Image 1 (cartoon, rainbow, N blue to C red):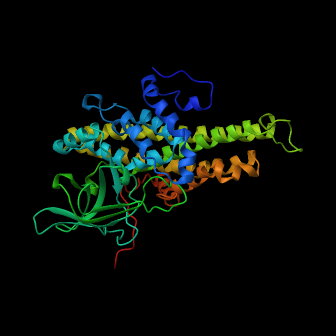
Image 2 (cartoon, helix red, strand yellow):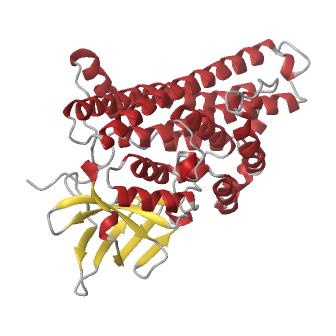
Image 3 (tube, rainbow, N blue to C red):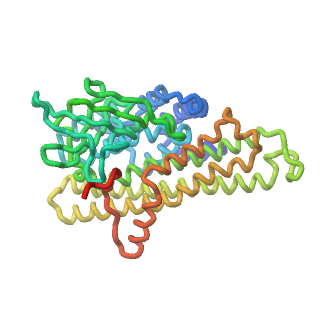
Length: 422
């Protein structure tokens, strides 16, 4: 059963969600939204806000009910992420690496790994991300290294950047070069141990509260059972990572329109060459906000369409997990994962420009006073521009065109770093 469609603009974000989810999350999300602008202005990390979402169950939303989760499918989870993003665009991005780990635990054929991590996730633990490096890596291998120490313990060393969410988490998902076989692997590293330093040194102008800074590993211990070659992870992982950013963009779009409308309703000053005595009655302003709201709705609809393809990819991955030697299941899972990548790229191509335009044009409905830092309306453009700079859309449109012309699906794994030495 879905919540009834409300009359206010904000109600629309919750309209398609089940009533029990609305009751569980909306009071928390409304509380988070109330102070989001000030937190951005003061650069105050949302530690308490994330704790509230963890307590409500956002980190275990995809875990089945029987295992202590909420059992949400991708379209439902996507709508919830958009609602949270509209309240504070930092929060779903903080959980981006965690959401990917949840999917690995759900689809892994390694039952010991799956059981161990489902229990940890159901118990409330979360994982950050530590894949990228500001320097030291190439497109062929990570700079961080994983090797057995003199004491016989597997240990990770290196410096990672863009470690989104890790400063809030118990674990981080780090990519390192395994010395033993020359393979890049994903290693889950416990953060509260010797040999780990987490720094809040992210200085981007947007998404300022995501903890996207530095981690230094200096011989931190790693459980060999928590190490997996990157290509052996679930096949739609890059589409999933992009989907989280898309949900953030959709939330930003809705928040920008809602706050612009609120500012218009509060305006007492008008221009003499406007069309009404009150800004909210000016037909030009009405038309502009109508256009921006329509664009926000189109972004949301596109993102939810991608969630449907992710659900298809998840189903195919489960079939492969249960029948790992089935060649047809393997081919189908790869095909659907590739299609999820294409659909995520198509949505990214549209949403990247649309949301930045919404966040910029909202100022046309207001006066110069709307640019005051105390109003923090600028955070929507800064956040949208920053989110859109991850996995740049510049490289995605070619993928889409190649698929349209030649039915060639994108490479599911790619890397960023210095070119490898010839």
